[in-house]
Length: 152
Image 1 (tube, helix red, strand yellow):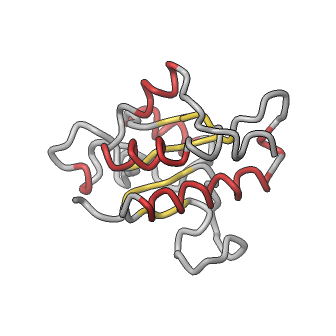
Image 2 (cartoon, rainbow, N blue to C red; image 1 turned 60 degrees about the vertical axis):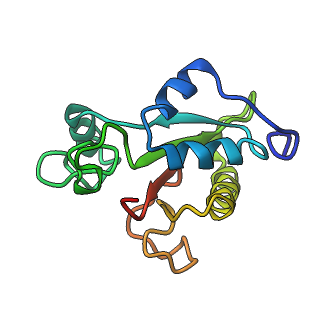
Image 3 (cartoon, rainbow, N blue to C red; image 1 turned 30 degrees about the horizontal axis):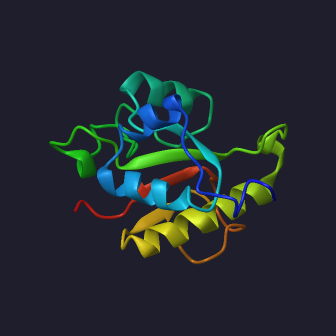
């Protein structure tokens, strides 16, 4: 697990730009998590068109038109804000196709959840939507997704 415990890690320019579209609490959580794990930021704020495309590809259950993602500024939790209340992350392991490494996503989730607890930020992970501590009983799995639970 060379992508863990050898931090602190730093974000590349693209990850920084994406992360900077997120709520400052998510930014703090991600920088805290980067002290332990190496990961990339896939998405922060998402346009309505991007959300609709992700829905069409069956990568989201929210269509972006009548049902909004916390990535979209139209979501009620983001009312009046200019930043996303959700972030999508991906483990970064040089030379490894992480899309086929479920364990890496689970470890990253643990690191991010621990970082959120340290930062006193309430989040929900897309691998445990109902927050019962089990990832195997979810109808829709989004292992890289983390979202704020509260507006403030």
